[in-house]
Length: 163
Image (cartoon, rainbow, N blue to C red; front, side, top):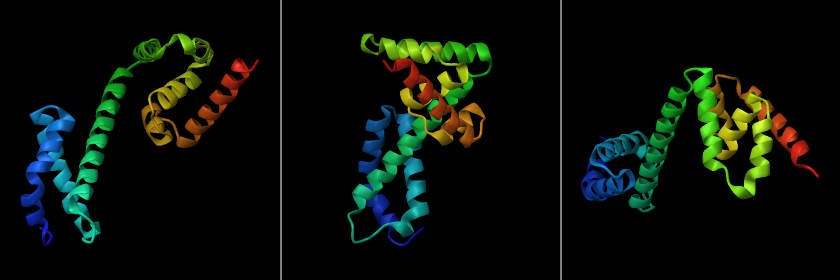
């Protein structure tokens, strides 16, 4: 193991585990996050700047690992929901219903009128926060196609919502 890393594990291990418990809310997931964090630290310890405090760096590594695990779970749920067209349409409609608010009724109506390929990228990108690369993976389409669909959808929505 990298020189000094054993000392860091001894010194910060229990605090890190406490953070993992707070982030995850359960021991099982916290154990996984704790292990993943230390694996990442081991793999990037040579990039740690010893003139800086270790704990904020360690915390950043942990939080990034946590965010990555949330993204993976979101992908797994979304991909599982898209086994067929009927299931995908149901998922998209439930997302729209979830996010529908009185003040956004005109926007949601315009989004609903978009062709399916544009409606899907708009919902996943703007209302669920997926980036172009993630969308390309989810939709099994090239990134350029996803970018074009987002661009085209914005044009269509602008036309629909302009006075």
